[in-house]
Image 1: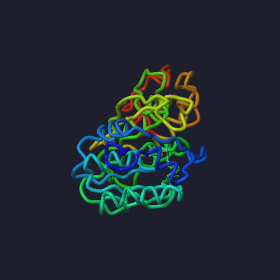
Image 2 (image 1 turned 30 degrees about the horizontal axis):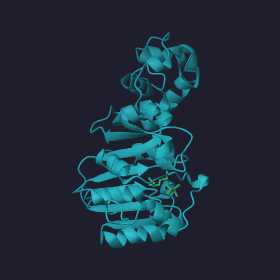
Image 3 (image 1 turned 60 degrees about the vertical axis):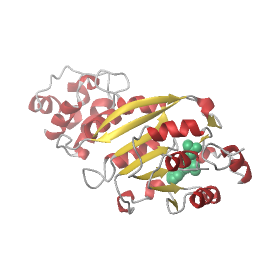
Length: 275
Ligand code: SAM
């Protein structure tokens, strides 16, 4: 029986192409096209957009994005075994799917030729997901090359991405995401939705770049968050000792008795700008 988009069911595609999931590549495939459509819909209207997808695998999410009308999908996949399955999707949607075989960590995303707004949508391999997100948050130029990012992570990572001050999950990643984007949790996906099921629940998060983030050097922000959260239970006068201590806090007008997790993104930027 054909799936909802007229292509063969993903389970058949995986069996026919011998795509047994490899742990080293973070392969946990989504087989339910209703779910992959729900993820793609989180990115908003796709009709005018070019979508960049990392790790299409057998193509479940790719098919959803295309079936919802994306003008173009540029997909970067490291596992060459997936290419024949993806070629079938490209044939079904002529001219709308370009597959690049390669490592997303080494892909110059800014240089990919894209028409219309660019939206990044991906069920990311867990071993490289956070690093990819950080790369996208710190591109050469701002505003960045993309209009939004809709990404699946382990729930724990998702909670760190959307965390604000005074939240247990607030840390370096939350400050970086809050500085450059507005990030929100969209929904959770249980382990059983994947083949094979991962050990933990996953979450889809949606991030939109801020047009005017607080002016601040990313390297300095990294320095202050690393020091402050390196000893998150200590008062700031102790945790930021190595980068300026009480004098730095006085310049930034921040009470030295406070702890890292109580500082807003704006206060972290102030600290960075006082280094
Ligand atoms: N998008 C598919 C889905 O939702 O069913 C597969 C998602 S699976 C979690 C992650 C995919 O990323 C796999 O297809 C894997 O081969 C690919 N991958 C892993 N590391 C990669 C890398 N460094 N660059 C590009 N793709 C990678």
